[in-house]
Image (tube, rainbow, N blue to C red; front, side, top):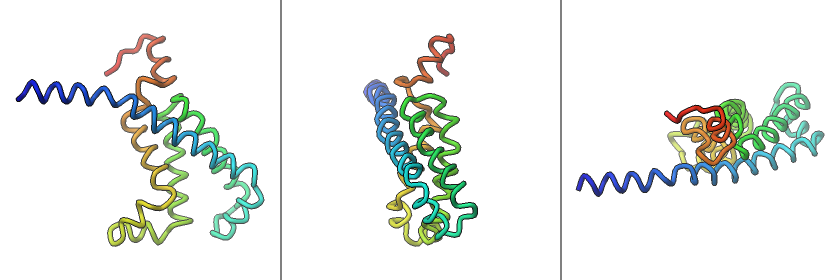
Length: 152
């Protein structure tokens, strides 16, 4: 039984890097598209931010759009992944607190609303990459191999 469990763990562990690649590609692209949309429609985005009472709405629209657009591309490539997830996580928290404050307040009383809010899967993806890294199929891994770093 112990050997069977060890075999199971070994096989399932091999799925980690492909899984991380899939979520980085999909959600990195989604971040890119969302950020690009904000930047290409800056006046509309700034108007929406102003309706949410976000101070300096145009500046914040540029910052959020740039973070999502360029952070998404870096996430997609797996370059600086654990670093780029930090500003992306911050941006998603701001999105929750400004656009969906009722969903934050109801995280325990109405968890379905919390997990179905737009920022949730973006946030979850960033937390997964922050904790587990970008995986073997990333530029971070290539750089680590070239530089001779060993995986811990």
